[in-house]
Image 1: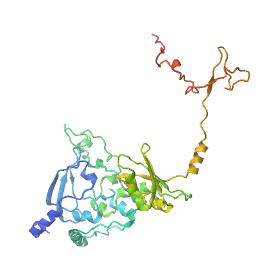
Image 2 (image 1 turned 90 degrees about the vertical axis):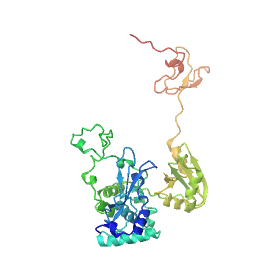
Image 3 (image 1 turned 120 degrees about the vertical axis):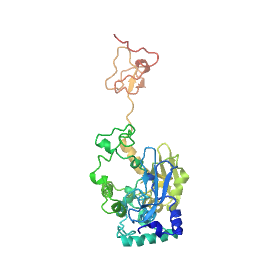
Image 4 (image 1 turned 90 degrees about the horizontal axis):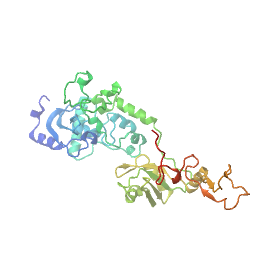
Length: 391
């Protein structure tokens, strides 16, 4: 279309405007401030993927951040469940190529790469959205995918919203006193300078369609080197207890843990240890414990807190480990000797020693290290006088 505004009717303009009241963005691009002022411009730009006019949103995620702007239309973003700004997955915060590789999903299955077929696909997506249907289908492989959980980002990454690097500073020619760019504004954190050249510039279409994405390749290579977190059930079938690590008692309690694990079977008991930040959950049957360990091994989320899960140990194995460590050695004893009489070197009481002299008393802590621990022998203790300083 030469002029989209002339070809569109008033009803079409009103429908498109109401459908784009708020952009589809991830938490990283939105910023930490829950109150954001946005600039909205209906049909203010051309979608970088479909080439159709769309409503452009522009905002600033923070005081020390640069302005963010949507680069693709709403239909294109919902077709692959990505952010309209960074084109990363909304659920896991990873590139499309990494997500599709983890799910073994074919590329370009939702939006064709050719212009003619892409226009038709966008029209079909618009019809589904108008009818209230979901465009992106979450497959069953996402439920318990180890590779996907390794790649997923659990916390927001706001550093990507920082201001760009000053180009005048790169040429050592920046003379502005109030330069808003890095590092002139005081922010010297510039990981872009040490990154690989292929990671600095990426094509928007390659990132969206999941082809030739160096960031996704690097993430997949790093995830393949990590050890597997798959839990192997112990040979002792009497073990029905699971260990949960990273339990924050301020954000969750026993009822929250029970609500997360009751679906796998009857729970016999839950023990939360707040000072250790862990919990033990015991199931009534071994089948329930195995289902919980298999399903929650890679994604055990309780009240937005990711927990670590492991199999518990049997009491016999725990006792054997404690016995293998051995009992601590007894503390040395000091005997009350008469003046001028030296104590025996081996520490044993001689047979000809009188009974009143053979009264063992516990030695002070650290006596083996040669440090005096009695208050009367410590110059810094109360009631004693330290060594005088010599001028």
